[in-house]
Image (cartoon, rainbow, N blue to C red; front, side, top):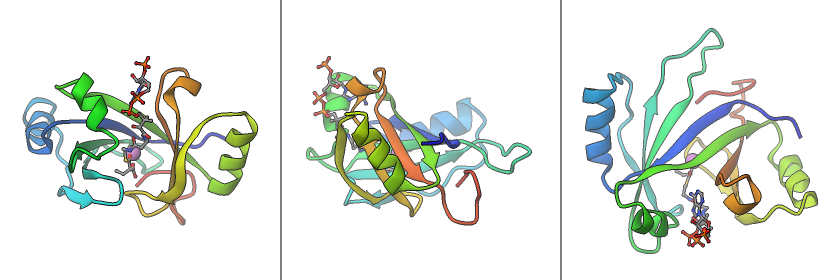
Length: 149
Ligand SMILES: CC[C@@H](C(=O)O)C(=O)SCCNC(=O)CCNC(=O)[C@H](O)C(C)(C)COP(=O)(O)OP(=O)(O)OC[C@H]1O[C@@H](n2cnc3c(N)ncnc32)[C@H](O)[C@@H]1OP(=O)(O)O
Ligand SMILES: [Co+2]
């Protein structure tokens, strides 16, 4: 398994609208996507794009707000009502190979591989098996050779 780019940091929030204001007005973010719903993941999503580097791929902040009480981030927000850093997402070249690698290391994989917000397959690893960090593994979008969005 070869580690790819840090694609995004997932930040849970009780209000994407309030978080957009924070990143725009307080942090000076100039490239923020329109929020959109992902009912199959139980979240509303919005990307805050950081400036691109020489490789033309900036890391994103992925704002996520629960769509309802069945959302996988409902419990996290119950414990952290203000929201906060929720997960990190690393890219890999081959999602099946990565899944087999982590399974072979006895890491708990949370649910099936599914299509994520960037249109490529993703899966999640339990934070208790990953040094306390909920970890999302995402296949690099084709044509981007190493990352980005
Ligand atoms: C936008 C789409 C997509 C993308 O394309 O990028 C996404 O990112 S969707 C993001 C939301 N989806 C997910 O998070 C799916 C995977 N998550 C889960 O299956 C669950 O959230 C969870 C990780 C199993 C947690 O479930 P929950 O019921 O909320 O908590 P538990 O009480 O079972 O937690 C057990 C234990 O783990 C600690 N914990 C929970 N969440 C986190 C976290 N985000 N980071 C670090 N640690 C976490 C929790 O505190 C418990 O610890 P103890 O209290 O010590 O037992
Ligand atoms: Co994510």
